[in-house]
Every structure is written in structure tokens, then in C-alpha cells.
Length: 491
Ligand code: ADP
Ligand code: GLC
Image 1 (cartoon, rainbow, N blue to C red):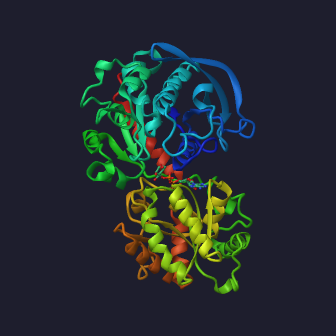
Image 2: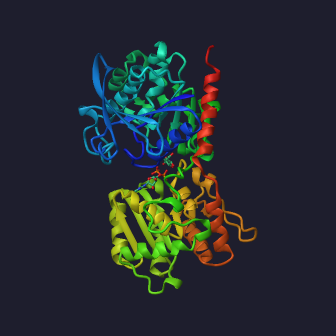
Image 3: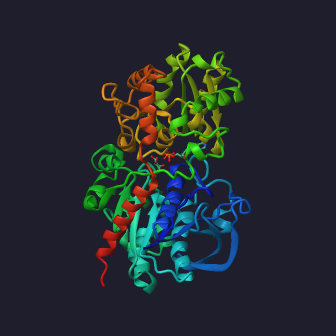
């Protein structure tokens, strides 16, 4: 199958969250299964072209934009660990600036930037002589690819047989744009924008809704989230659009790239380990603690370490987290290590906690890939008290690293973490349901009780590490979904 994947984030070039992990892991897995894949993302100013081996091609794309053409340069790279071609769309105006979306509120012209990217992807495919079977767009940024395919590009011979698949990684970000601008940038007649139109929500041009309505199939990143967004407020106002596409909305649980996330083969760890040498985690924990100025007095009898690597947003449960963890830290019942960035109030509250309990709390604000791996390896438990969670990858990385997850059982957390049962010894972690600090604290207390208590400690960590979360399963399921869209293609 010939797949064109278009996204605003692709690891390792540009990453804010798990979207980037998925848009690099899937293409690698598809290529390993024999599919032909091309990846498109912007050439952001912050990407280190040299470090990532980017080469400028001599292509210049003329992108029809409103009443005129705008131009893009094209850079090429190869996705590490594969030979998947990656094309980066260059534009001084749109992408040569710091950051990806712009901090907090985002850049004012994100409508232009991402509609430009979505259109440029089609123009690139034409310039390369590609005839994609499927164009696979992700989240609101590249959602405009779906209406662009159906309204404009399918009338061009290169895309006559192309189908559109749209993957929702998060309903919380929808891309609400001024319709006069967005319809014009896309090249759609303004009379097609009216109350109840597929582009319209609450009077605005809604990218996510347009992606949902115009795609041949819509996927989201876990089966539970696929249900939640249809029937609960997690649909963030788009429940009826999702219900309308009910038969075409499929939950495909994310998977993990084991080239990137495997404790036996992780260049960021001082010591590799696997399920049979899991005791080495203890050494990695001592290293992490020592490096951050927390010296355990007695390594054999030290405190359990709870880790978190997270965007600091309401989604990740920050409003219940502080009240839940405080008492454990005060009682000297555990240590905490957090790597996170985002909400300024949460960042400063975390720094205050670290200042108040310097030998029990380590806090790093900012983005640090090496440290994210080290925290996963060094921690005993991994906490994810999310308010909602489309899938979540860090709990999966934790499990792969023998770190026991404590999660709120929503979305993909419910689909990836099973409750440990001390009678049967089955299960991979601890779960709670109510979105309250009390419920979270109760789950933390349950978890801390199994710390180093045998035979449970061995069982639960082994169960977690033995869970198959590989990206191959997810990648094949996507290909199955792509296949369904192609069945409807006229011969
Ligand atoms: P989300 O996409 O909602 O942020 P996921 O769990 O799917 O959540 O993915 C988060 C990804 O971002 C993981 O790869 C995680 O390691 C990474 N990450 C999050 N915050 C940081 C940070 N401050 N530094 C480094 N990596 C981070
Ligand atoms: C989003 C979601 C997260 C998911 C990730 C990758 O950022 O918040 O739950 O794991 O996308 O699909």
C-alpha cells in the first residue's frame, strides 16, 4: 500500500507529545511490513538540519492559497532506523520561528500555517509523481487534508484513487478558525459555510470537525476513547459529529517503538537490563537520585520512587495530583521525580514541592528526552492520574521498563493497564476511577503496599514487562482500516 502521512509533529524532528512518537513509529512499522510510506511535516526553524541529516532538494512547490500561489521549499531526510523518506516543507513566513505551535495560546496565524502544510502535502505528492492510496492526517493541524481531498484534489488524476483517513489523538485541541480566512485559504467557496455545514461548529471553522466529517474513516488512539468521545463530554462538543460517523470511527490502541523504548538497548541508560535482570533498576535509581542530590542512606532499604514525565495540563490530572501526593511525601512514604512542562502555576507548585522536600522530590521543568528515559528506568512506579487520556504512551513505556503504572482508568489507560490481582497474580498496575485526590491517593497507597513485597513485586513487574505493546499490532490494524476505505474505490 502507498501511504502518505502528514502531521505537525514527527519524532525526532519535532515533538511536543505522543503524536510525534506515533507518526514516526507507524511509518517504520509499515515499511517493515512492505508498504511504501512517505512522511510530510514542516521544516520548523528549531529543527537542527545538520544533526538530523536534512538535505535541501531543488523542488519548489507552488501551493494555491486563496487567490494566489505561495511557495514552499522542500527538504528531505530519512526516518532514523528505517529508509522511510521524510519531506519537510520549508517556508520562511510560516515555519522559521521558534517552537511548533507557539507557546500557550499558539501563534495567531496557525490557521494559515497548517492549512498551508495540508495543501503543500498534496502538491508535494504531485511533484514526486506519487499516487497515494491513502493520505493519513493527524489531529486538527492536518485535518484540512480531509476536505481538501474530497472537495479539490480528488478531481485531479493523481488523487482520483486516494482515500483519506483521519486519526484523532486528542479532542481537546480542535483548531477553531475564522471561517472567512479558513475557507479562503483552503480554496472552498464561502457559500459552503453555513450553520450545520461539515466545517462549521458554533459559527467557527472547526478543523477537527471537518476532518471527522470528510474522512473516509476516522480512527482514534484507543477503543475506550472511541466510545467516550461519542457518548460523554469527552467528545468536547463534537459528540454528534462523531455519532454521525459512528460506523466509520474505529479505536486503534497505540503501540510503542521498541527500537526507541527498550531497557535492554537504551543509550540513555548507564546500565541495560531486561526482565531477567530487573534488579538493575535499583542501581539506576541510585544513580538518578545521586545525580539530583538525593542520597539514599541505605540502598537496600530505600523509599519507593514514583516517576512522571508529562505535559503539565489539566488533561494530565494536575488538579488532583498535588493533593494526592502531598501526604505521602510528608510521611516520607515515597520519593517523587517529575519531568514536565506546560502550565506555569503547576510548574511553580512543583518547584515549591521540590524546595520543601529536597531529598524526596526531584523536579525538572522543560523538555529532556534523555531524562525521560532515565526516569522510566529508575522509577518503581509511574503515576498518570489523567482527567482524560486518549491513549497515553508513557504508561506503556513505564511497563516496558518494569515500572508499575498507577493510572486513572480512562481512555487508553483503561485499555493498556490491567489491575493487579494478588490472588491470581495477574495484572500490570493499579487503577482508580473517580477523578478525586482521595481515589488517586488510595491507588497510590495500594501500589506502595506491593513495593518489594514478594511474590507480588516480581509478578507485577514481570507482567508489565511481558505485555506485548509493540507498534506492529497497531500498524497492521491501521492497514486493515486503510484497506476498508480502498474497497469502496471504483475499479
Ligand atoms: P501526550 O501526547 O498527551 O503528551 P503521551 O503519553 O502519549 O501523552 O506521550 C507523551 C510523550 O512526550 C512521551 O514520549 C513522553 O516521554 C514525552 N514527554 C512529555 N513531556 C516530556 C518532557 N518534559 N521531556 C521529555 N519528554 C517528554
Ligand atoms: C495525544 C494524547 C495521548 C496519546 C497521544 C498519541 O497527545 O493526549 O493520550 O497517547 O496523542 O496518540
